[in-house]
Amino acid sequence: MALYKFNGDLLPERRGIVGEVFNSLGRTDHSVRVVRRGRRFARFTKPSFLIWVLLLSAIFLISFSVFGLKLQLPGNLEILESSISSSQKFDIGGNRERSVKFSNEVQHEFSGSNNVVKTSRSKRRKQHFPCEVGFSEAVEYLIEPLDIRNFTQFSLRYVDTEEKALGTTSFESRFGGHQTLQEREKSFYARNQTVHCGFVKGPVGFPSTGFDLDEKDKAYMSTCLVVVSSCIFGSSDFLRRPTSKKISNFSKKNVCFVMFLDEQTLSKLSLDGHIPDDRGYVGLWRIVVVKNLPYDDMRRTGKVPKFLSHRLFPSSRYSIWLDSKMRLNTDPMLVLEYFLWRMRSEYAISTHYDRHCVWEEVLQNKRLNKYNHTAIDEQFNFYQSDGLTKYDPSDPNTPLPSYVPEGSFIVRAHTPTSNLFSCLWFNEVDRFTSRDQLSFAYTYLKLRRLNPDKPFYLYMFKDCERRALAKLFHHRALPSPPPVP
Ligand SMILES: *[C@@H]1O[C@H](CO)[C@@H](O)[C@H](O)[C@H]1NC(C)=O
Ligand SMILES: *[C@@H]1O[C@H](CO)[C@@H](O)[C@H](O)[C@H]1NC(C)=O
Ligand SMILES: *[C@@H]1O[C@H](CO)[C@@H](O)[C@H](O)[C@H]1NC(C)=O
Ligand SMILES: *[C@@H]1O[C@H](CO)[C@@H](O)[C@H](O)[C@H]1NC(C)=O
Image (cartoon, helix red, strand yellow):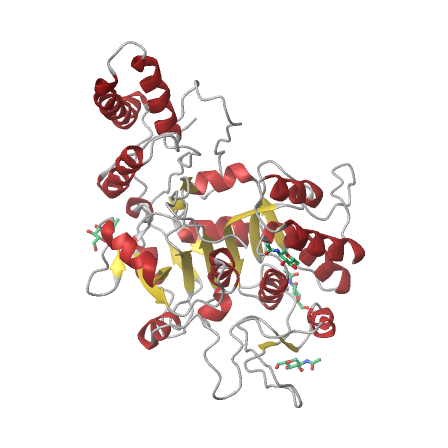
């Protein structure tokens, strides 16, 4: 069941949706119905009345979806407000505290939804619904366990600078560096080592390799211990603020909510009314502007904050990644407690709602023309020759519930193996295509294969659980989409 919750916090969103309906009919489920209705009426009315009919039906549909559905809701509109009464805190100075005390019970509810408006009439697409996540119901204490697992310990360092090799004439510095295939092979071992993991600088005198941040933002980011982050590059989305009422005072005070934007997106969002305040915040989001984007492909640029939060937030111990099409509806501390501490995992990501085999994912990517087919084939052939197999649900020893993830929500403890996995996955996206669903299983399986006695505790949760954590929206439809390579 889908719930529709509209409160003051959502008002800017509503404006956005209304604008969307009027600006480009025929995209969202709303507007599709508006168009159909419009056509039906057009048979009986003069064409000059069409615009009025469209306007009126749009207004009717929107007010029905906002107010009508709200009235039908069962008494489930209670506000989640968990307060922290403890004097023990995550101390920004670096003195981590172990126990986080919540003074009253926390309610969870089904509030993720695939569509803004969902009716039984919409049968074009398979519907996916949120399901219950067993967040602590009556949490008195959230304890950060110190030794839930003996996570593999080793010391991971990162390639910082690459020198131009002697005798080479043309050298172009790259954000991802120039990792050789031998270096790549070695990088999969969970042991003390220095790996490529983005942010590679060129020799002195060479231009920046990109992802340039303001010093003040860097200073702020280096204080964060728990991070929720997201990004919008190339104006591909609206800004979705986390539902403030669902976020505890503790998290508001102690969790960094960081939204990375490029300058173009920032000015576009300003037109939507999202203007950062004096301190650089829009709602809970602290806006961090990224200059000199490292890749022309905005999707690939988006993988930098998505995978490399342990590099961007060097003191952080936990991070949650959220795709910009989602609005966070759940307290981040509850998310950490459930997906990491209770599941005793160091990395949590959801399965794909539909596909479980990389073979299917490759077909789908080609069918929807998501990427240059030759480049997909090169990557896929490489993986097959290095042992990638089909997903076999009948095999009881299958190491994962799915070989295809839905990576729009990732929860991480910044342990060595988790950080290594993030770097390895990023390097695949840097080397091959930016379609990260293609490289996930390969990277995971190879890491496990080369480190048989060093476990990596990756927990794949259900897609319906992901839908319960955050509300899903459609991406912003662009008048001129960013170039697809
Ligand atoms: C959270 O903080 C706000 C403002 O500081 C305060 O008004 C509110 O009472 C606090 N909520 C709880 C449950 O302590
Ligand atoms: C971790 O290792 C220590 C010593 O090797 C052992 O005493 C402890 O029980 C282990 N903890 C877990 C959760 O396995
Ligand atoms: C790995 O690095 C850690 C800390 O830097 C060190 O204590 C440890 O001895 C190293 N292990 C090996 C096998 O070199
Ligand atoms: C597609 O990828 C192949 C191999 O990476 C490359 O040679 C080719 O130029 C690409 N085609 C386009 C249209 O970008």
